Each structure stands twice: as structure tokens, then as C-alpha cells.
Image (cartoon, rainbow, N blue to C red; front, side, top):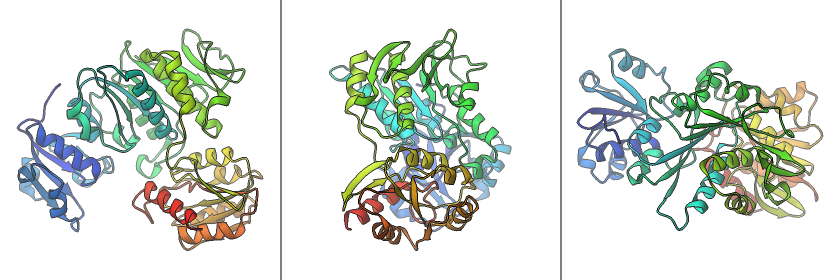
Length: 457
């Protein structure tokens, strides 16, 4: 375990859960830590109360003084802080070592890392793989941690790891921007579709950042890729890692590659049957891709077939991802608050088998909604819109000839409108195709409120 941070002046930029966890880990490892946020209204006393060794922590809010800039040896960025932030650019030009929370966690942890990225499906795949690894490790000296963009920051648990720890991590593009030595034993890129273009500026940049998950892997490591996605399939070129593909097609023509595929209603690994599709409890074809990715990673780790099969059979949808809420008056209600971009929402719509009242809209990430509207294809009977993007999505719907649109004041209003318009045999789906930050703290809060409103109907 390396420790480049001991005795260094480390500036942690961002006071969210990742920033606080990073600051705590640095303090435990002998760094001199300043926790910084440009938001001067943040409650410094509440921040300090969250640390066991708070007396060693320096907190700066609003503006960083010149002297504090000069003293900074290492800058640790929370995922929400972009590299083109003026302070980040300034300190980088001064020669400050710039890194990120996920890199910090990797450097100060032990054991083996399995890491998953992609535009959609990360949380489901990470959760499922975590359950498989826990089942595999049950009764052994191995402990399994599930961390990253899924919930608990990597840095929150890095000190708990040992040589026998298996860490399963969901990794976002924001986190991959600041890696240096990050090196999973097994990594996966599930898919790459337009998202976060307000930060990455182009699809080329976004795809390049996603590909970074494998940049330090070598021939003894594995990279799992979606063969059916042209962007991820192309990532197999000039790879040092051993590539394993997964595909929803039959037996693909893939020379000298291991692969997971679907054959006669069964998910197979190199032709060996692993689990029947009818035994999988997850809705939607996209979830078959998530299962295939998890199967590929588990097989490459050496998990026995029966452990994988039993875990997949018993696995249910994660919270906020096409999550069944209740049936009322013959109407099924589903929470897909994690559908934070058009492609994710498209997959949720495609998974619906009943006429659907869809609630969408939210924070504007400069996405295009044409394919989202086109995916309605007779399934969506009514679109209810909220948030910053409501007008833009409505205009897009009208351009495509879809006029069954109602604007709502907020999520509670949207749920009530859905209740008034849904009929026996319909479904109501919250799948916003947008982030949540215009009206909510995060997609989790949005999903929980949706479930509360639906439960109170």
C-alpha cells in the first residue's frame, strides 16, 4: 500500500460525501488536510462534527487565500468538480499534483478490485456482482465491499481492506477523469451513449474517459465489453488487458475471445449454460446485458457456475431502477428515478408491457430527446413533464407528432395527474430522462418522494 500523502498539505475540493470521506482517509494516513468548498454558505461546524479527529482538519469555505494555494502539495477532487474549474487549472499550472477521490481510495486500499463503468446499468451490475462475490466468499476469510458511485465512497472503506478483500466498485466518468494508477483486476464498460455532455463537451471525449478504466490494466487483467455497442466494441482494439465480450446475439463470430451470449433462452459463457432467462426477475432486455456483464466478470474471477446461477435467480431490481412500487385500481406504478438520461429512460419504456403514463423531465444536461420520444412507439399514452427540461421535451414531442403532454408543477402534482389519467391495465412510470438536481438533492430523493406520493394515493 503506497502512501504519497503522509506529511503532505492536501487540499480536498468538495464537501459532499466523497470529499468528506477523502478528507477522513487522508487524516488517518498522516496528511495535513484542508477541506474546501466554493460555497461559502456551507455549515462549517456541521462539517467538522462529522470527523473523529476534527481538530486536525482545516476547513475553508468560499475563497482560497493565496497563502493556502502556495502551501498546497496535492489537490484531491470530488467527482463533482470538473478539471476545467478555474482553481483546479490554476493549481495544476503551479505544479500541484491533481488527483481524485477514487484514485485516492485505490492507492490506500488492498485486495482485488472489480470495477464497472458505462452510461447505464452500472448500479444494477455492480449490485448483482457484489451479491455474487458475497455468496462466493461466504464462509471464507474474504470480505466483500461494494463502493463508488453506487453509494459509499471508495475512500470511506479503503482502511478496512486487507489482502483478501474483494472490492466491487461502480465508477463514473467524472471519477475516471482523475485516475493515475487505478488498476482493476477485472473491469467492464457496459455501454456508451450520450450523457454528461455539458461536462465532457463531446461524445468522443466522453467515450475516451470511459475507456480510461482499462488504461493501466495488463495481460493478466480482464476487460469486459459490450459487443453490441459499437463504441465499446471498438475499445477492444489496442488493449493490454484480455478482453471478454458479452452479446445479446446468438453465437458471435469472435476469434480468440471468451464471450457471454444468449442461446435458446439461456445466458451462456463460451457455450456453457449458466442461467435461464425465465429465471431472471429483472425487467427489460437491458437488464439481460447487465446480468451478462456480471456473469462474465464473476466467471473470470473463478466463481463457480452454481453460485452465479443461484445469485442471479434470487436477485431483484435495485432501488430506483424500474422498481415496482404498488398496484392501485389495476394500475402498476414503477420508480425509475435512476433513468437520468434519455438512453436509460428509453430502456425503461421498452421494458413496459402495458400502456404507460410516463413522468419525465428534470435538470438540463444538454441532452437530445428525439430518440426518447421515438421510443414511445405506441407504448406511452401520456407524458407528464416537470423541471427545467419540461418545455424542451414538450417541443421535441410535438415535433415528433406526440401531443399527449401535460405540464405539472412538481412531482407530487405529476403523480396526482398520472393517477387521474391512468386506467385499469395501465402502468405509471417515473423515468425522467434527466438528472434531478434542479428540484432534488439527487435521484434517490426524487425516487423516494415518488414512492411516498404513490403510496399515499
